[in-house]
Picture 1 (cartoon, one colour):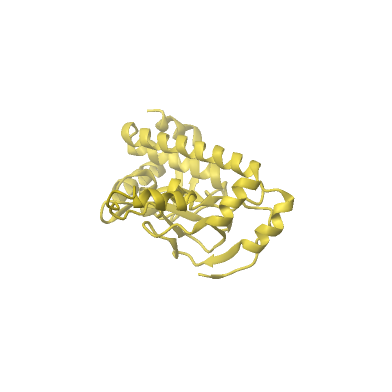
Picture 2 (picture 1 turned 90 degrees about the horizontal axis):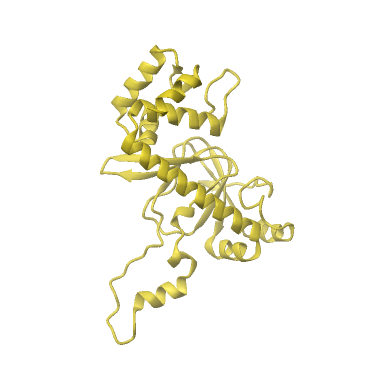
Length: 252
């Protein structure tokens, strides 16, 4: 990680929704950081210090699944927010949390628990630049910028709906349907390159972590879809050839 300074105060989730009068304060409080491909931005269990906004590049948001596996929850690209999953009652109201932690004066203090930690990890899958704001400034931004607060509320609602869809798919959709659904969603989010590939390169392991399946199953499924001329796989690059037929797998 190293310092950067290329935020235009117009691109990220907060910049687009804050008052013009608030931007000088944002300029003074933000910290810009660069991360190399594969570098961890924060890890599951680390203390929540603030929120991040992607200025350039792509970040995978993932969670430990068992002892040696992970599941990818989503990808954050330019303009997106991440690190918000560490927010909670105790994060936003530290004084109240400390009082609740101590308990009534007539009782023994409860065992120390600190929920203000990241429940997920964030890793750069390509060179990434982020804008970071600490919790105190985030709270102040919420109080001053109603549009930002409203946008964050809608974003949380959308994330909850997407999480519920993923839980349903894991329970009821076959792996081929989940792979097809993931490829279609990635193309919708990232678009296509000039030569028609989905504009994000993922290893088979990352794709397996995204759909909640084993590497071997996803590898076999990709080969089957390619054999049926639904997709073309060139290493980490995938081109969707027949989106209509792919959609049918998501409905089975």
